[in-house]
Image (cartoon, rainbow, N blue to C red):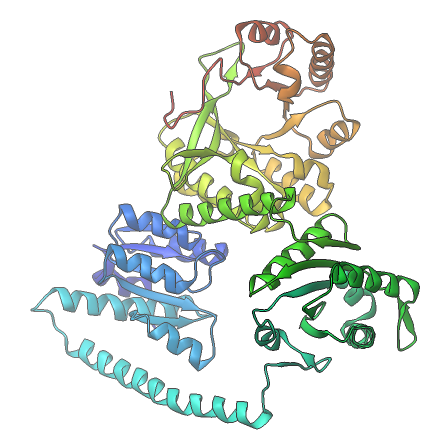
Amino acid sequence: MATLKDLIPFTKNMSLLYIDEHQDTLVKNTQELSKVFRHVDDASDATMGIGYIKFNDYDLVIADSSSTIMNINQCIKNIRQKNQFQDIIITTKETTENALLSLYSLNVNSIIQKPFTFSSLLDEIVYVSAKMIHDRTSNADTAQLQADLLYERKRIGRFMLNEKKLNEKLKSFEDKIHLDRNIYELTHLPSRYALQNAINGKTQSLLYINIDHFDFINSIYGMGKANKLLRETASRLNIFLPKNSELFHITADEFVILLDEPSKNQDILLAKQIQALFKEAPVEFDEHTHYVIFSIGIDRGEGKRLFINAKSASKEAKYFGGDQNVVYNPQSHYMKEQRENLYWINVLKKAFEEDKVFIYFQPIVNNTHPQKKHYEVLCRLMDENEKLISADKFINSAKLVGFITQITKTVIDKAFKIFTKNNYNFSINISMYDLHENYLLDFLEYKCKKYDISPSRVHLEIVEDIIISNSSHVDEQIKILRERGYPVIIDDFSTEKSLYNRMFDLKAQYIKIDGSFTKEIDVNRAHYVIVQGIVEFAKKNGIKTIAEHIETQEVYDLIKELGIDYSQGYFLSKPSAQLE
């Protein structure tokens, strides 16, 4: 087994990039490897790693095969675009031969299966780095290396020989159980694959039927009984069908009825009849009864778009509470919103892949000592027209596909690199998603140690979803963060009683007064009184106040007159890519 000392002859002049979303593994391994490599960079996901690679050259890259945003194939492809000869080690949880063969096909230097010991990682690094040195120098002593390489070739060769046998076994297995993709096994109804053949290009109507609250049904009755409910539901739907229709089972809780050459409004009437039929009598299964309700989407026309459109309409019905029938309308508010979300999701994906997520800075001015600098760190991304976009445009779309934590990690990573060069305090927005994923405590601690930044400089702006969540799990993390020295700011503070309660729960040191009150304080007497009350309350409880949306001299003068501690807004300074 290799030790760190064994690596020094090979790695003392090398640089390393380590990519792994598992924070504990990343922190532990990079801290140790930084002792023997000339330079080590760590990336908490593949997109961040690709960003490093675009601006730096590395002798070795270690990348984990699991990524929530970019699969390992795309990651390796992006790495090869910068350096087609890049030396790469992959770590993976994959255990099947097919999956491992697929990873070997990426032409990487080595694959390490998880869980692995640190010593086994060192063994692989010694092997790979020794080969790298051999490839780069002609006079090296390579006898042992050649023996190692011969062993590795034999190991991979044996591995590849099993591929044919594995494929034969797979085919034999498929033949043995007579797989028929056209039948849904649970209900023996035609499946979605059969539906593809049934959509024949003639005028048809498609009803996409989604059972509402099926997760609840599964939780209450258990999977076995829920399956019996599904079979009874399918049986009742089948009995009720008109002659020019066929019923398909798409997924566990989704069915489709396809009408051939329907009469006028037949699809809408059928959807209403189905809803009424299931409301009048519950579905009986074992000793239970349950009233099944549906979200039904409808589309009429020709071709494969029927399925997509009706499914979208079904989602629209569910979006508005379920137990509804919705006819597909591409101009509905919901459909326009979905198209907009799709656009921003694609922009986000591209921005992550091409490292076009940027941070901007807006000063938070100390009203008593304006020379004391504090900055809020804001996220911007570049769209396909090379235009910078503020977060309010894409943040809701990011929530839909789980990109929020990726945005936060990127902002934190870029911000720490900037603020390690100065002594300014800075604020970072933290959402409920960040705390639910349980990465923030270790991630911030690691960044503070790596960049030698005191937690007291890193202010955490708690956004609305945390304030209204009232989750003990979330509150406990905020308590730990506060105890470790990170100041807590409650964003968009207003007059709601719940906000006052949450302020005490979270023991926030700062509150940022809702900008809808402060920006009109000079012309709206009611808003002036509200802000005045918030400031007086904060002072009595030893809490600092921040006023945002300061857009005129008149508003700024009143803010200072009220004794608010800090101000932020376009009148003082617009967000900028550079610190002032």
